Length: 230
Image (cartoon, rainbow, N blue to C red; front, side, top):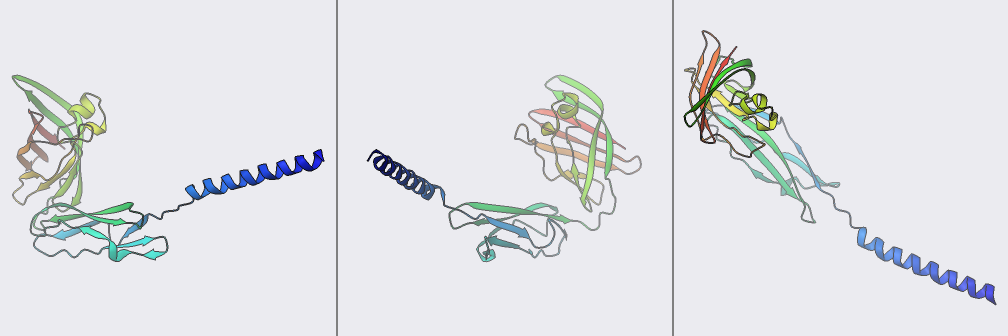
């Protein structure tokens, strides 16, 4: 009799455990498939100034289902203005979760033939109120993204990144453009560490005779006068 009672209690306990496990599993068994996005064409597209830009789009898959027709595209490209543009593709899956991917489009002036890419040595001054601080010997790189358009590693000439030792997050990096008359203009700039940018970039010029680039940057109420020497 005792053996029969023990067996019955064990069966009831097992049934209770299985029942609870099934109930818990139901709460955790929802599977969502994020939309995967793949660019058609290149991640960086070069567009000559004054031409037209036709976006190549993306392929979007939600699990095994093609949902490319549901992708929303934000396309700010103006082929009549030199610049760096970001095209963004966004898709939301059936459970409301978003996915996105971007393409960079560089609209460039094909009449600009000089190439100023390279690593430069800095000679600069920072003016803060009545105090002028000279600094030099740091390095800044210009990397060509398209004819006449360059990624600059630090508009501030390494003042915070290298001079203060704050690291790359405190460089004011972005894109500049070289014009046919050898003037230099800022296109974009951003300091990741502080989440801000320059107020203005002025007096930019490239001197091909000596391979020098110079400009003035107003940042955080201070003036940085930067010369880059090859």
